[in-house]
Image (cartoon, rainbow, N blue to C red; front, side, top):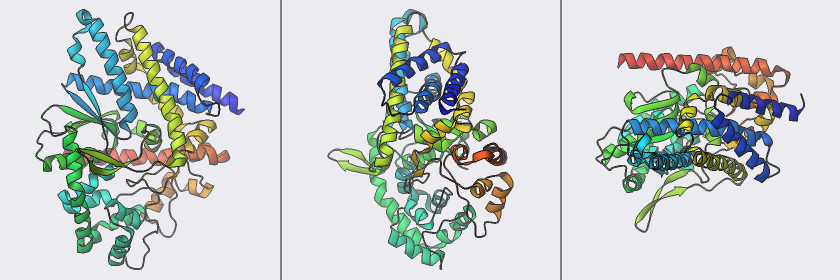
Length: 489
Protein backbone atom coordinates (compact mmCIF):
# COMPACT_ATOMS: atom_id res chain seq x y z
CA UNK A 1 0.00 0.00 0.00
CA UNK A 2 1.48 3.44 -0.97
CA UNK A 3 2.58 5.72 1.88
CA UNK A 4 -0.19 8.28 1.28
CA UNK A 5 -2.90 5.59 1.34
CA UNK A 6 -1.50 4.10 4.54
CA UNK A 7 -1.59 7.55 6.19
CA UNK A 8 -5.19 8.08 5.11
CA UNK A 9 -6.09 4.63 6.44
CA UNK A 10 -4.68 5.44 9.90
CA UNK A 11 -6.46 8.80 9.95
CA UNK A 12 -9.78 7.14 9.09
CA UNK A 13 -9.10 4.55 11.78
CA UNK A 14 -8.63 7.32 14.38
CA UNK A 15 -11.76 9.08 13.18
CA UNK A 16 -13.72 5.84 13.57
CA UNK A 17 -12.48 5.44 17.14
CA UNK A 18 -13.61 8.99 18.00
CA UNK A 19 -16.98 8.64 16.29
CA UNK A 20 -18.88 7.95 19.55
CA UNK A 21 -17.53 11.18 21.07
CA UNK A 22 -18.64 13.77 18.49
CA UNK A 23 -17.42 16.75 20.49
CA UNK A 24 -13.88 15.41 20.71
CA UNK A 25 -13.99 14.39 17.05
CA UNK A 26 -15.02 17.91 16.06
CA UNK A 27 -12.18 19.42 18.15
CA UNK A 28 -9.69 17.08 16.48
CA UNK A 29 -11.02 17.91 12.99
CA UNK A 30 -10.84 21.65 13.64
CA UNK A 31 -7.36 21.47 15.14
CA UNK A 32 -6.12 19.27 12.29
CA UNK A 33 -7.48 21.67 9.67
CA UNK A 34 -5.79 24.63 11.40
CA UNK A 35 -2.51 22.76 11.72
CA UNK A 36 -2.46 21.66 8.07
CA UNK A 37 -2.96 25.26 6.93
CA UNK A 38 -0.69 27.00 9.45
CA UNK A 39 2.06 24.50 10.29
CA UNK A 40 5.46 24.09 8.69
CA UNK A 41 4.91 22.56 5.22
CA UNK A 42 7.76 20.11 5.91
CA UNK A 43 6.01 18.78 9.01
CA UNK A 44 4.93 15.15 8.44
CA UNK A 45 1.18 14.77 8.14
CA UNK A 46 1.41 11.72 10.38
CA UNK A 47 2.66 13.92 13.23
CA UNK A 48 -0.23 16.34 12.76
CA UNK A 49 -2.86 13.58 12.64
CA UNK A 50 -1.48 11.70 15.65
CA UNK A 51 -1.25 14.91 17.69
CA UNK A 52 -4.84 15.94 16.98
CA UNK A 53 -6.64 12.58 16.93
CA UNK A 54 -4.67 10.55 19.51
CA UNK A 55 -2.45 12.65 21.77
CA UNK A 56 -4.81 15.60 22.24
CA UNK A 57 -7.85 13.50 23.27
CA UNK A 58 -5.62 11.38 25.54
CA UNK A 59 -4.28 14.47 27.29
CA UNK A 60 -7.76 15.93 27.69
CA UNK A 61 -9.22 12.67 29.08
CA UNK A 62 -6.44 12.24 31.65
CA UNK A 63 -6.49 15.84 32.88
CA UNK A 64 -10.30 15.80 33.10
CA UNK A 65 -10.01 12.76 35.37
CA UNK A 66 -7.35 14.47 37.51
CA UNK A 67 -9.48 17.58 38.00
CA UNK A 68 -12.54 15.52 38.89
CA UNK A 69 -10.58 13.47 41.44
CA UNK A 70 -9.03 16.59 42.96
CA UNK A 71 -12.35 18.41 43.28
CA UNK A 72 -14.13 15.40 44.78
CA UNK A 73 -11.44 14.94 47.45
CA UNK A 74 -11.22 18.61 48.39
CA UNK A 75 -7.79 19.42 46.95
CA UNK A 76 -7.00 23.12 46.75
CA UNK A 77 -3.83 22.92 44.70
CA UNK A 78 -2.26 20.67 42.07
CA UNK A 79 1.48 20.54 41.36
CA UNK A 80 2.35 19.40 37.83
CA UNK A 81 5.87 17.99 37.80
CA UNK A 82 8.38 18.94 35.12
CA UNK A 83 8.73 17.99 32.37
CA UNK A 84 6.05 15.40 31.60
CA UNK A 85 3.56 17.62 33.42
CA UNK A 86 4.03 20.72 31.26
CA UNK A 87 1.27 20.00 28.72
CA UNK A 88 -0.89 18.49 31.48
CA UNK A 89 -0.51 21.80 33.33
CA UNK A 90 -1.49 23.79 30.24
CA UNK A 91 -4.53 21.58 29.64
CA UNK A 92 -5.55 21.85 33.30
CA UNK A 93 -5.39 25.65 33.12
CA UNK A 94 -7.59 25.58 30.02
CA UNK A 95 -10.19 23.25 31.55
CA UNK A 96 -10.23 25.09 34.90
CA UNK A 97 -10.87 28.38 33.13
CA UNK A 98 -13.69 26.80 31.12
CA UNK A 99 -15.19 25.36 34.32
CA UNK A 100 -14.99 28.72 36.11
CA UNK A 101 -16.72 30.50 33.23
CA UNK A 102 -19.36 27.79 33.00
CA UNK A 103 -20.01 27.90 36.75
CA UNK A 104 -20.30 31.67 36.64
CA UNK A 105 -22.75 31.58 33.73
CA UNK A 106 -24.83 28.70 35.08
CA UNK A 107 -24.47 29.29 38.82
CA UNK A 108 -28.16 28.54 39.31
CA UNK A 109 -27.92 25.21 37.49
CA UNK A 110 -24.50 23.64 38.01
CA UNK A 111 -23.18 25.01 41.30
CA UNK A 112 -21.15 27.97 42.41
CA UNK A 113 -18.01 29.42 40.87
CA UNK A 114 -16.22 28.69 44.15
CA UNK A 115 -16.34 24.96 43.35
CA UNK A 116 -13.76 25.50 40.62
CA UNK A 117 -11.18 27.49 42.58
CA UNK A 118 -8.55 24.76 42.16
CA UNK A 119 -5.06 26.24 41.80
CA UNK A 120 -2.65 24.71 39.28
CA UNK A 121 1.11 25.18 39.63
CA UNK A 122 4.09 23.94 37.63
CA UNK A 123 6.96 22.53 39.68
CA UNK A 124 10.49 22.31 38.27
CA UNK A 125 11.67 18.85 39.22
CA UNK A 126 13.43 15.70 38.03
CA UNK A 127 14.44 12.35 39.48
CA UNK A 128 18.05 13.59 39.58
CA UNK A 129 17.22 16.94 41.24
CA UNK A 130 15.35 15.20 44.10
CA UNK A 131 17.23 11.93 44.47
CA UNK A 132 20.63 13.55 44.92
CA UNK A 133 19.70 15.70 47.96
CA UNK A 134 17.65 12.76 49.30
CA UNK A 135 20.63 10.33 49.35
CA UNK A 136 22.00 11.24 52.77
CA UNK A 137 18.51 10.94 54.30
CA UNK A 138 18.09 7.26 53.37
CA UNK A 139 21.72 6.09 53.38
CA UNK A 140 22.37 2.85 51.49
CA UNK A 141 18.67 2.76 50.60
CA UNK A 142 19.60 5.14 47.77
CA UNK A 143 21.40 2.26 46.02
CA UNK A 144 17.96 0.96 44.99
CA UNK A 145 17.70 4.04 42.71
CA UNK A 146 21.39 4.28 41.76
CA UNK A 147 21.76 0.60 40.77
CA UNK A 148 18.74 0.49 38.48
CA UNK A 149 18.76 -0.96 34.98
CA UNK A 150 18.18 0.87 31.71
CA UNK A 151 19.44 1.04 28.14
CA UNK A 152 23.24 0.82 27.75
CA UNK A 153 24.01 1.51 31.44
CA UNK A 154 27.70 1.71 32.46
CA UNK A 155 29.43 1.94 35.84
CA UNK A 156 30.16 5.58 35.04
CA UNK A 157 26.41 6.18 34.63
CA UNK A 158 25.73 4.71 38.06
CA UNK A 159 28.28 7.01 39.65
CA UNK A 160 26.86 10.08 37.89
CA UNK A 161 23.46 9.19 39.37
CA UNK A 162 25.12 9.45 42.80
CA UNK A 163 26.67 12.83 41.94
CA UNK A 164 30.27 11.59 41.53
CA UNK A 165 32.71 12.93 38.95
CA UNK A 166 34.38 10.81 36.25
CA UNK A 167 37.62 10.78 38.20
CA UNK A 168 35.85 9.64 41.36
CA UNK A 169 33.98 6.98 39.37
CA UNK A 170 37.26 5.45 38.19
CA UNK A 171 38.55 5.42 41.75
CA UNK A 172 35.45 3.63 43.06
CA UNK A 173 35.54 1.19 40.11
CA UNK A 174 39.03 0.07 41.12
CA UNK A 175 37.69 -0.68 44.59
CA UNK A 176 34.44 -2.51 43.77
CA UNK A 177 35.04 -4.01 40.31
CA UNK A 178 38.80 -4.29 39.73
CA UNK A 179 39.88 -5.10 36.19
CA UNK A 180 36.79 -3.64 34.50
CA UNK A 181 36.43 -0.28 32.80
CA UNK A 182 33.88 2.34 33.80
CA UNK A 183 32.44 2.58 30.27
CA UNK A 184 31.56 -1.08 29.72
CA UNK A 185 27.82 -1.70 29.30
CA UNK A 186 26.45 -3.63 32.28
CA UNK A 187 23.71 -6.23 32.22
CA UNK A 188 20.70 -6.00 34.52
CA UNK A 189 22.14 -8.76 36.74
CA UNK A 190 25.59 -7.09 36.92
CA UNK A 191 23.99 -3.82 38.02
CA UNK A 192 22.06 -5.59 40.78
CA UNK A 193 25.21 -7.32 42.00
CA UNK A 194 26.95 -3.98 42.51
CA UNK A 195 24.62 -2.92 45.34
CA UNK A 196 26.37 -4.95 48.06
CA UNK A 197 29.98 -3.92 47.26
CA UNK A 198 28.95 -0.26 46.91
CA UNK A 199 27.13 -0.37 50.26
CA UNK A 200 30.31 -1.75 51.87
CA UNK A 201 32.64 0.76 50.14
CA UNK A 202 33.26 3.51 52.70
CA UNK A 203 34.87 5.80 50.09
CA UNK A 204 31.77 5.67 47.87
CA UNK A 205 29.39 6.20 50.81
CA UNK A 206 31.43 9.20 51.97
CA UNK A 207 31.45 10.86 48.54
CA UNK A 208 27.77 10.19 47.89
CA UNK A 209 26.83 11.57 51.33
CA UNK A 210 28.91 14.71 50.75
CA UNK A 211 27.34 15.39 47.33
CA UNK A 212 23.87 14.88 48.77
CA UNK A 213 24.30 17.27 51.68
CA UNK A 214 25.67 19.96 49.36
CA UNK A 215 22.38 19.88 47.37
CA UNK A 216 19.96 19.57 50.28
CA UNK A 217 19.53 23.23 51.32
CA UNK A 218 18.77 24.42 47.81
CA UNK A 219 16.23 21.66 47.16
CA UNK A 220 14.32 22.24 50.41
CA UNK A 221 14.54 25.99 49.89
CA UNK A 222 12.88 25.72 46.48
CA UNK A 223 10.16 23.38 47.74
CA UNK A 224 9.43 25.70 50.67
CA UNK A 225 9.26 28.69 48.35
CA UNK A 226 6.74 26.92 46.11
CA UNK A 227 4.41 26.21 49.02
CA UNK A 228 4.87 22.48 49.52
CA UNK A 229 5.28 22.92 53.28
CA UNK A 230 2.01 24.83 53.56
CA UNK A 231 -0.78 23.14 55.52
CA UNK A 232 -3.30 22.87 52.67
CA UNK A 233 -4.59 19.81 50.79
CA UNK A 234 -2.67 19.42 47.55
CA UNK A 235 -1.60 16.63 45.17
CA UNK A 236 1.08 15.95 42.57
CA UNK A 237 0.38 15.24 38.89
CA UNK A 238 2.86 13.42 36.65
CA UNK A 239 3.29 10.58 34.17
CA UNK A 240 4.10 8.13 36.97
CA UNK A 241 5.60 4.66 36.19
CA UNK A 242 7.17 3.46 39.52
CA UNK A 243 6.31 6.17 42.06
CA UNK A 244 9.83 7.07 43.22
CA UNK A 245 9.44 10.80 42.55
CA UNK A 246 6.69 11.05 45.16
CA UNK A 247 8.73 8.95 47.58
CA UNK A 248 11.82 11.17 47.17
CA UNK A 249 9.73 14.30 47.64
CA UNK A 250 8.16 12.80 50.75
CA UNK A 251 11.59 12.18 52.31
CA UNK A 252 12.71 15.75 51.59
CA UNK A 253 9.51 17.30 52.97
CA UNK A 254 9.47 15.10 56.09
CA UNK A 255 13.06 16.10 56.86
CA UNK A 256 11.91 19.73 56.72
CA UNK A 257 9.04 19.13 59.18
CA UNK A 258 6.10 18.43 56.85
CA UNK A 259 3.71 15.84 58.32
CA UNK A 260 0.81 15.54 55.85
CA UNK A 261 0.72 12.36 53.69
CA UNK A 262 1.46 13.05 50.02
CA UNK A 263 -0.94 12.15 47.23
CA UNK A 264 -0.33 11.91 43.51
CA UNK A 265 -2.40 11.46 40.34
CA UNK A 266 -0.53 9.62 37.61
CA UNK A 267 -1.10 8.66 34.00
CA UNK A 268 0.02 5.10 34.77
CA UNK A 269 1.76 3.10 37.50
CA UNK A 270 3.74 -0.09 36.81
CA UNK A 271 4.84 -0.57 40.40
CA UNK A 272 5.41 1.29 43.68
CA UNK A 273 8.26 1.54 46.19
CA UNK A 274 8.08 -1.20 48.84
CA UNK A 275 7.41 1.25 51.68
CA UNK A 276 4.88 3.37 49.76
CA UNK A 277 1.39 3.97 51.15
CA UNK A 278 -0.86 2.60 48.39
CA UNK A 279 -3.63 5.09 49.28
CA UNK A 280 -1.43 8.00 48.22
CA UNK A 281 -0.90 6.83 44.62
CA UNK A 282 -3.69 7.03 42.03
CA UNK A 283 -3.14 5.66 38.51
CA UNK A 284 -5.47 6.47 35.61
CA UNK A 285 -4.59 4.34 32.58
CA UNK A 286 -3.15 1.39 34.51
CA UNK A 287 -2.13 0.52 38.07
CA UNK A 288 0.37 -1.91 39.64
CA UNK A 289 -2.23 -4.59 40.42
CA UNK A 290 -4.12 -4.38 37.10
CA UNK A 291 -3.97 -3.31 33.45
CA UNK A 292 -1.47 -5.90 32.19
CA UNK A 293 -2.89 -5.74 28.65
CA UNK A 294 -2.71 -1.96 28.53
CA UNK A 295 0.88 -1.97 29.82
CA UNK A 296 1.87 -4.47 27.13
CA UNK A 297 0.55 -2.23 24.34
CA UNK A 298 1.88 1.03 25.83
CA UNK A 299 5.27 2.75 25.43
CA UNK A 300 6.30 4.95 28.36
CA UNK A 301 9.48 6.11 26.56
CA UNK A 302 7.41 7.34 23.59
CA UNK A 303 5.01 9.02 26.02
CA UNK A 304 7.89 10.91 27.69
CA UNK A 305 9.28 12.01 24.31
CA UNK A 306 5.94 13.51 23.32
CA UNK A 307 4.66 14.98 26.57
CA UNK A 308 7.64 17.13 27.43
CA UNK A 309 8.41 20.80 28.08
CA UNK A 310 10.17 23.53 26.08
CA UNK A 311 13.06 23.62 28.56
CA UNK A 312 15.90 21.35 29.68
CA UNK A 313 16.01 18.92 32.58
CA UNK A 314 16.09 20.33 36.13
CA UNK A 315 19.59 19.54 37.47
CA UNK A 316 19.10 21.27 40.82
CA UNK A 317 18.37 24.69 42.30
CA UNK A 318 20.30 27.89 43.01
CA UNK A 319 19.57 31.17 44.75
CA UNK A 320 19.17 34.24 42.54
CA UNK A 321 18.50 37.31 44.65
CA UNK A 322 15.69 36.45 47.04
CA UNK A 323 14.38 33.46 45.10
CA UNK A 324 15.41 29.89 44.42
CA UNK A 325 15.49 29.14 40.70
CA UNK A 326 15.91 25.83 38.83
CA UNK A 327 19.21 24.97 37.14
CA UNK A 328 18.26 23.66 33.69
CA UNK A 329 20.39 21.63 31.30
CA UNK A 330 20.99 23.23 27.88
CA UNK A 331 18.61 22.04 25.18
CA UNK A 332 19.96 19.60 22.60
CA UNK A 333 19.90 21.42 19.23
CA UNK A 334 18.94 18.23 17.38
CA UNK A 335 16.07 17.58 19.78
CA UNK A 336 14.89 21.17 20.19
CA UNK A 337 13.35 21.51 16.70
CA UNK A 338 11.32 18.30 17.04
CA UNK A 339 10.10 19.24 20.52
CA UNK A 340 9.15 22.73 19.35
CA UNK A 341 7.09 21.30 16.48
CA UNK A 342 5.30 18.86 18.76
CA UNK A 343 4.63 21.57 21.34
CA UNK A 344 3.20 23.83 18.64
CA UNK A 345 0.75 21.15 17.52
CA UNK A 346 -0.48 20.27 21.00
CA UNK A 347 -0.74 23.96 21.95
CA UNK A 348 -2.96 24.41 18.90
CA UNK A 349 -5.12 21.55 20.17
CA UNK A 350 -5.40 23.28 23.57
CA UNK A 351 -6.52 26.51 21.90
CA UNK A 352 -9.13 24.61 19.89
CA UNK A 353 -10.46 23.00 23.09
CA UNK A 354 -10.83 26.43 24.68
CA UNK A 355 -12.64 27.84 21.60
CA UNK A 356 -14.96 24.84 21.37
CA UNK A 357 -15.87 25.00 25.07
CA UNK A 358 -16.61 28.72 24.83
CA UNK A 359 -18.99 28.13 21.92
CA UNK A 360 -20.55 25.03 23.51
CA UNK A 361 -20.95 26.39 27.04
CA UNK A 362 -24.53 27.59 26.73
CA UNK A 363 -25.94 24.79 24.59
CA UNK A 364 -24.24 21.75 26.14
CA UNK A 365 -22.57 22.60 29.45
CA UNK A 366 -20.43 19.72 30.74
CA UNK A 367 -20.73 17.65 27.53
CA UNK A 368 -16.96 17.57 27.00
CA UNK A 369 -16.37 16.22 30.53
CA UNK A 370 -18.82 13.41 29.80
CA UNK A 371 -17.11 12.57 26.50
CA UNK A 372 -13.70 12.58 28.20
CA UNK A 373 -14.91 9.55 30.22
CA UNK A 374 -16.23 7.75 27.14
CA UNK A 375 -13.43 8.29 24.61
CA UNK A 376 -11.72 5.06 23.48
CA UNK A 377 -8.21 5.85 24.71
CA UNK A 378 -6.96 2.21 24.85
CA UNK A 379 -7.81 1.63 21.19
CA UNK A 380 -6.26 4.96 20.12
CA UNK A 381 -3.01 4.37 22.01
CA UNK A 382 -2.77 0.75 20.85
CA UNK A 383 -3.09 1.79 17.22
CA UNK A 384 -0.41 4.47 17.51
CA UNK A 385 2.03 3.07 20.09
CA UNK A 386 1.85 -0.69 19.50
CA UNK A 387 0.94 -0.91 15.80
CA UNK A 388 2.31 2.31 14.25
CA UNK A 389 2.42 2.92 10.53
CA UNK A 390 5.82 3.23 8.87
CA UNK A 391 5.34 7.00 8.57
CA UNK A 392 4.44 7.33 12.27
CA UNK A 393 7.44 5.19 13.22
CA UNK A 394 9.83 7.30 11.16
CA UNK A 395 8.41 10.58 12.46
CA UNK A 396 8.35 9.77 16.18
CA UNK A 397 11.19 7.24 16.11
CA UNK A 398 13.67 9.92 15.09
CA UNK A 399 13.07 11.89 18.30
CA UNK A 400 16.07 11.83 20.64
CA UNK A 401 15.66 10.08 23.97
CA UNK A 402 17.60 9.08 27.09
CA UNK A 403 16.17 6.83 29.78
CA UNK A 404 18.79 7.75 32.40
CA UNK A 405 18.14 10.23 35.22
CA UNK A 406 21.14 12.29 34.07
CA UNK A 407 19.72 12.52 30.51
CA UNK A 408 23.08 11.79 28.91
CA UNK A 409 23.69 9.59 25.85
CA UNK A 410 20.77 10.78 23.75
CA UNK A 411 19.77 8.23 21.10
CA UNK A 412 17.00 7.91 18.50
CA UNK A 413 13.87 6.65 20.20
CA UNK A 414 13.44 3.84 17.64
CA UNK A 415 16.98 2.54 17.24
CA UNK A 416 18.13 0.56 14.22
CA UNK A 417 18.59 -3.08 15.25
CA UNK A 418 19.57 -6.21 13.32
CA UNK A 419 17.39 -9.31 12.89
CA UNK A 420 19.51 -11.10 15.52
CA UNK A 421 19.03 -8.21 17.98
CA UNK A 422 15.25 -8.29 17.37
CA UNK A 423 15.31 -12.03 18.09
CA UNK A 424 16.84 -11.31 21.49
CA UNK A 425 13.60 -9.52 22.46
CA UNK A 426 11.46 -12.63 21.96
CA UNK A 427 10.36 -14.31 25.19
CA UNK A 428 12.77 -17.29 25.42
CA UNK A 429 15.94 -15.56 24.09
CA UNK A 430 15.29 -12.55 26.31
CA UNK A 431 14.93 -14.68 29.44
CA UNK A 432 18.07 -16.59 28.55
CA UNK A 433 20.08 -13.38 28.14
CA UNK A 434 18.82 -12.08 31.47
CA UNK A 435 19.59 -15.27 33.39
CA UNK A 436 22.79 -16.24 31.58
CA UNK A 437 24.18 -13.05 30.01
CA UNK A 438 27.58 -14.47 28.98
CA UNK A 439 29.45 -12.32 26.47
CA UNK A 440 26.47 -11.07 24.44
CA UNK A 441 24.65 -7.91 25.48
CA UNK A 442 21.02 -7.06 24.89
CA UNK A 443 20.59 -4.17 22.44
CA UNK A 444 17.49 -2.24 23.41
CA UNK A 445 15.35 0.48 21.88
CA UNK A 446 13.23 3.13 23.58
CA UNK A 447 10.31 2.35 21.27
CA UNK A 448 10.71 -1.24 20.17
CA UNK A 449 7.45 -1.24 18.19
CA UNK A 450 8.76 1.64 16.06
CA UNK A 451 12.11 -0.08 15.53
CA UNK A 452 10.43 -3.32 14.45
CA UNK A 453 8.17 -1.47 12.02
CA UNK A 454 11.12 0.38 10.47
CA UNK A 455 13.76 -2.36 10.43
CA UNK A 456 11.97 -5.67 10.96
CA UNK A 457 11.30 -6.24 7.26
CA UNK A 458 9.19 -9.25 6.34
CA UNK A 459 9.52 -10.59 9.88
CA UNK A 460 7.73 -7.52 11.34
CA UNK A 461 4.66 -9.41 12.62
CA UNK A 462 6.75 -12.25 14.08
CA UNK A 463 9.17 -9.93 15.91
CA UNK A 464 6.29 -7.82 17.22
CA UNK A 465 4.46 -10.86 18.56
CA UNK A 466 7.63 -12.22 20.21
CA UNK A 467 8.32 -8.88 21.88
CA UNK A 468 4.71 -8.56 23.08
CA UNK A 469 4.77 -12.07 24.58
CA UNK A 470 7.85 -11.20 26.63
CA UNK A 471 6.34 -7.90 27.73
CA UNK A 472 3.07 -9.53 28.74
CA UNK A 473 4.98 -12.10 30.80
CA UNK A 474 7.03 -9.32 32.42
CA UNK A 475 4.00 -7.28 33.47
CA UNK A 476 2.14 -10.38 34.64
CA UNK A 477 5.10 -11.18 36.90
CA UNK A 478 5.25 -7.58 38.15
CA UNK A 479 1.53 -7.63 38.94
CA UNK A 480 1.88 -10.94 40.77
CA UNK A 481 4.89 -9.70 42.81
CA UNK A 482 3.07 -6.50 43.71
CA UNK A 483 -0.02 -8.33 44.94
CA UNK A 484 2.11 -10.81 46.87
CA UNK A 485 4.08 -8.00 48.50
CA UNK A 486 0.90 -6.18 49.50
CA UNK A 487 -0.61 -9.32 51.04
CA UNK A 488 2.55 -9.91 53.05
CA UNK A 489 2.44 -6.33 54.33
